[in-house]
Length: 422
Ligand code: GLC
Image 1 (cartoon, rainbow, N blue to C red):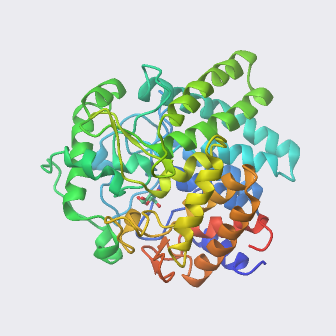
Image 2 (image 1 turned 90 degrees about the vertical axis):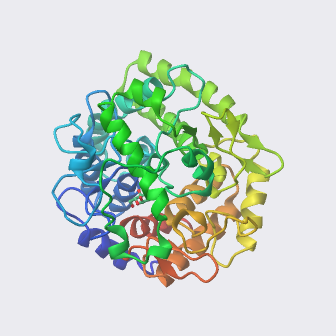
Image 3 (image 1 turned 180 degrees about the horizontal axis):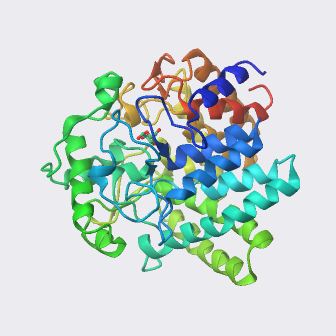
């Protein structure tokens, strides 16, 4: 039951750079937004103060307008491209990227607070973070859903956290491959190129960075002019869950007006996500905001409304999870093996990811699907241990892929300890 717990703690300690944790030593040498949410919860299982510090350090990169960047470059490193000079942002006290990532931070704060054994200290740390979280959720509403549709837009595949998901193939194909920045990939020097995004995808990623930099990172211009504009089902589900968690924090630390503001955002989000349900696929789909059409490419992201606690299709979602889990030895495949786009070793096109598995185990447990949650938690722990805490895993045989001694894999191992049998 406690197998691997010490090893997981040791990985977090080894990846600690003094107040923040790098996802992996050389592959990702800075602080990443949603990794830090998971990592903070992981730290808090054995060192609460360090868990809070992880989030406080991340928020040093928050912009005046509320954006929480996807990378905070606390200290220079030659190991990663694109570094701060390519982003050319000026929004925060420390150098940062200019795009964001799925907003899991309010959920991390609420989770650490809820299971805290150091009450007064935890209340004080959560109270300090609350205004930052509120500003970040206001940024999402204002910058990414100014029309109030209930769905927020992601403007770069990196913002979805699932960089080369096959869901982005069609929307990304509209992005030109020309870049003004010379591309000096470092990732393929650290891990096998067959496990990473392809070259043309990378050119398009950098084209978008060049475009946004040219727009001065102006949120309004970026939304209007980005050739890549999707309502990612994962991001929207995570944000909906985070709104509920932020609401709990607002009732404790905020004003009635703030709580009312958050309450008002929830039903439109629920309804808009509800419209992304695909009866034929048994899960939710992302939406291409430029083409104004659903993206008919099922991925594990479409199961994440379970993390948001959405009840209407919970039983069918659990059935889809079960079917996908039966099709592989090590669930959850990021793309189902039945899909012609399934590539079991290439990043977000097939491998199983600890981060996604944790959100699904947590979500299905809250929806009362205890059996499904516990089975997934148990297999995920075995997968992480068998694959040596790698970044992601081949769902056919559990081979660990990508970066080794990965922080969120360690954090997820610690978080899953709360599931009996895991
Ligand atoms: C990759 C992943 C992203 C993650 C980052 C750091 O870019 O796609 O989700 O946050 O690595 O681990």
